[in-house]
Image 1 (tube, rainbow, N blue to C red):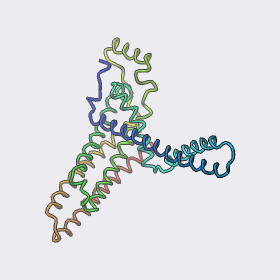
Image 2: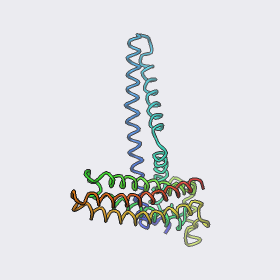
Image 3: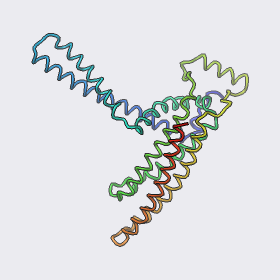
Image 4: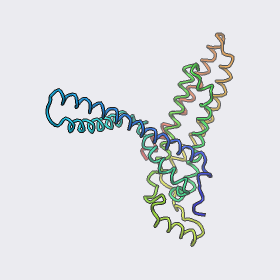
Length: 275
């Protein structure tokens, strides 16, 4: 039926969207705290100034100081975002919308099954990489710095690729969604009653091709990470002074492989952004 929740059919995509949704909520809380702290600080400074001056309008300028502080805090948080951070921030907003649609079984109507499948494949790669690099071995504070660099590089690349993947489909989300638009819902139910199933997009979205390439690159990256993870654990388990040099040589080779995979991902991201 129309209201069958499709998030069970796309578990990795659902988990990724929920993760970004939680990040968006935490980011909003941090901005709110910064705004309050800065706003109170500026307000307090205005208050001291006005008391020293001894003029009228003490409380009025204090309130103005609070609003000035809020504006300054908002400007500061926006100013500090680099391009990758701005990309993730934008993706978090889209993910919040997508997550709601997916939970209510409506995202399929907007994107169609091929696009949903390719997003699930991308998210599967994202989940696998985070699983491989989220073990105690890779999170150990004493892990050699070159392996820590590999981990950070790969995780950042995967996060950027996933953010780009969902942003490729942001323009395909319908204007009306959620339970508030009863007219749209009634039309969708009528479609299912008349045609036996809801109508899906007849053409692939323009973002499908770039997303397909991202999914293919993600799969290759997962294979590389699996190889590096296995060799790293084998080499570092018995690591001693006599084997340190040989282990470093191996790590250098693996780091170059990861760098090549990352370069391919970035090249693909650049091409999809220009498209």
